[in-house]
Amino acid sequence: MAGIWVLVVLAGLALILGVAAYNGLVGMRQLTRNAWSDVEVFLKRRAELIPNLVATVKAYASHEQETLERLAEARSLAAKSRSVAERSVAEQSVTGSLTRVVALAEAYPELRSQANFLSLQQELKDTEKLLANARQYYNACVRDLNTKIESFPSNLVAGATGFRHEDFFQLDDANERIAPAVGDEAKRS
Image (cartoon, rainbow, N blue to C red):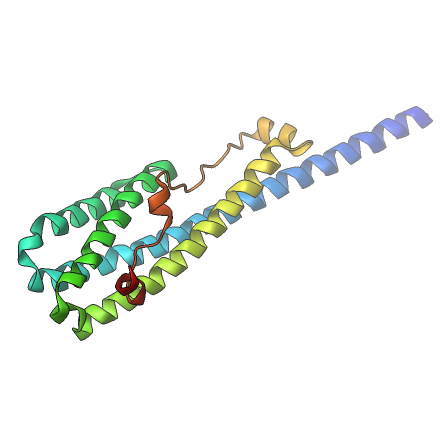
């Protein structure tokens, strides 16, 4: 009789641990989804600044059409990307093109002094900082979720319930790890 009670207690304990592991995984997955949503908000904010920036630069540097078109094309491709990995690659192109467009201001002193351009530069600078923080937080959530998926005993629950690893938001090119130089930073470069 005592053996049956021991088995019942052990089964109950295993059930409680399993439920706790499952709920922990669900919580981490939701946190990761929320963190990715935050990244997308700032990517969208940056994407919304791009047409204004292009229009402002175009007024002063109309012969730089190819650079402006590359930025618009990169922005369009980024918006169409479906996965985190695709978005990472697409955003590298946006960042590179954006850096080239902002660098054009150096060749046009009248553009650098224009209030609308200066305002756009500040908005872009602020957005890049927010985006960097959001990317960092997202990657921390992915790290924690992936660790939980691989750790015992939650790995047993994760495998049985279909939890999968999430992709990190990575930048492959070391040069892309640096935010576009805008504002005062662009002048020092």
